[in-house]
Image (tube, rainbow, N blue to C red):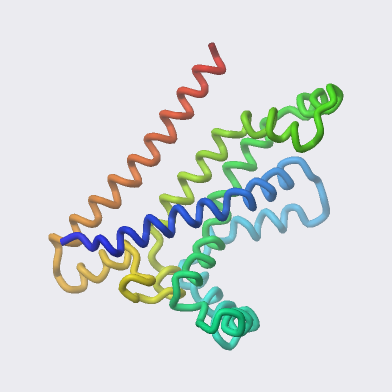
Length: 224
């Protein structure tokens, strides 16, 4: 049996995370692609850290930072009269953090490929920095931006360890499709686990396939 509530929550979490990360990741990616500053390697290492940390370790630190006894948790509780951990809001914030490298790195690589003289030529033609971004940089970096959005969305759907530690397993609130699959396996309900696993696989595969198809189409247009 499909847990439609868990699937709906996972899709909402994936879309919300990708939407929130988009502007932040673009700013960080452009900054890292073109700026040279002391501590740049350290900044890049910090961004990439969620890629190599075990999910339980990252989940533990996020639980500590967002917990009710932490300054962040206390401030959130004072403002909204509810706990940040074991809530969708806390889950969204955790998802935002553990997806940063999946959003930033593809965009950074895309912005890095844009020649400096192309941007300088746009400035010489009278384009402001903002118009250069919209007219020149973003169209050229769009494949990297799209890749970042798809990777963020797909990774959010499949994340388990961090989600379980920060959000718990509350039906309708924090139980994602990945946790629902784990529950069904624990209950020896392999039929439901297989159905939900296949659904998650198909959604992720479809998203990545559409990303590659769009990038191929964009490459053909540029080549033509």
